[in-house]
Image (cartoon, rainbow over all chains, first blue to last red; front, side, top):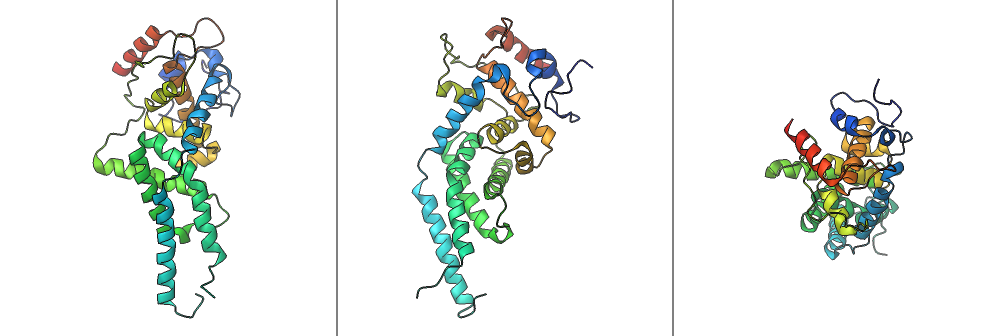
Length: 88
Length: 189
């Protein structure tokens, strides 16, 4: 078998890009199972996190908060109308 | 006394609020555009609210919301005929703006590279590498096998490394030309 079986990838018929795997250097395939970002890819998780954090830190648009409030109020109003004095 | 809110209702709204920044970040990553992402988040909020009785308290609300948003994204894309890139026949374009000569990647370079990934690979690497989901959770969100997620993450990082010209520990890493040539070769074959 030319491809190591312990590269953390389960073989799924038709999904693995073998072209790509063959092109990959052996050392790149020998990441520990479950460690998708070992070795030469060390830079990627850092950048990925930076990218994602920058999005995460953006302020949530006001309209989402308003929408949630509106949904909540509408539901409470509906509940009061449907069941005036029952708890359920 | 004003109506006493059942604790469950309050928790649901609050739990949703807490998930919004991450949900929105995922939406931007998927759709690549803030305006579309915000529409997606809005639709997701309404969908989630409408079916909140189907949410089991104590389970992972973030994963639940991500699943709804993802389904919404793909169903809107299908309806509008908008093309979703998947891995098949995907052509990797060269970055016009390479990782610069000093080997420093800035955020814009990374974003540009990320946006060139096929959608299935981009969402996989975002879910696992940034949103903090385990492979199993990401598989659940995407409705596919764990092995499929692992494979997509592997391919995503390989592609990103090529786009960003991150080379291995040895001196035989791919250079820009060979990457471009291989990409074209495989795109045509």
